[in-house]
Length: 450
Image 1: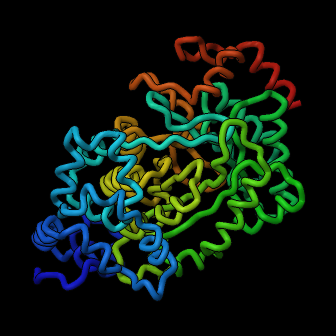
Image 2 (image 1 turned 180 degrees about the vertical axis):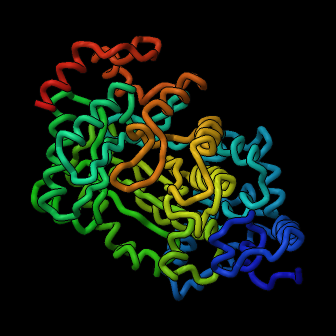
């Protein structure tokens, strides 16, 4: 490979193989070209990322956000490093939780993407395990020794009893401390408001220390706030370029308005992190808004957008977009570890939807592998679905049982406030072990399903 002339090309050629980069025409043509690019990237000074943009400053508000919000003081401890030296430092004991937390505002997404391209799977796991981001709304997510789940009770026609049955099933397995979040089948305001009241009824009546979310467009959430609906979290899918975000119907100003409006409701009990963002490698390419940048670097740029708003939750839906972008289990596993590491390095409360579509070359064994690796890496939360099968969105994810497995394997517990509620309801004992359904949960089921 001839020496790349731009950071954009160097980052793309150094990326581990994935189908999306090949589709975009930016991938290395051979393993030799990829390794030569990784060697050149390792020798690249980190300061180059502050003087050379992968997307021009004048053309893209995400680029402007990245550079205008960069903290030079936080960057100072690694200012002299090359990308390769940064990678080596991240694996030393000097890169501990305190130093990594202080460093995060001094890192650009492109720096995080670059160093991840030089790392093996075990490097991504070890470095991410030392990063910690704690957020709060009605409970506290991301504490040491804790592992949370989004309870995802989707239903193909938004039928109330079906959603409630899945919710009760998930609670019975200790799921739901990150959020009880529904992807609505219908995006009408009336339907979304009905679902918000449904989830709020369960949370309020049984004093469950968690938060609800109906994953609708941010403009719908703003209108529902005006109507007095019980909005806990404001959701939005985001991407790493201004053009890709425009395809989602959002920009930074709109997200700022939504964040301020949701915070103004004051519905949190222990904190006011109110935003919930979802991302995924390939979203900018699917919108024809990638500017010739590789999909993993663009994914990291989406984290700059998320970081601006101090969200409660960020979730990379790693295999959802399909095999055009991540072809098989190996690519999905690698992408999940990259996304989690880069998000944590940039100071975000990262979760991962460990998932695949039915036409990808992947299966549940691949998801078990990624689940276990992410547990070791300190992932804040995963999804919990009945049987790991989303019957509304038609993709495969992780089940309520998967979270139980990981908590048992690694000795992790739910968020502390939620754990206390589980003990009060007779779902967990004081040691965090699941109990057979007791009278508290049976009463809940009988009442809400009546």
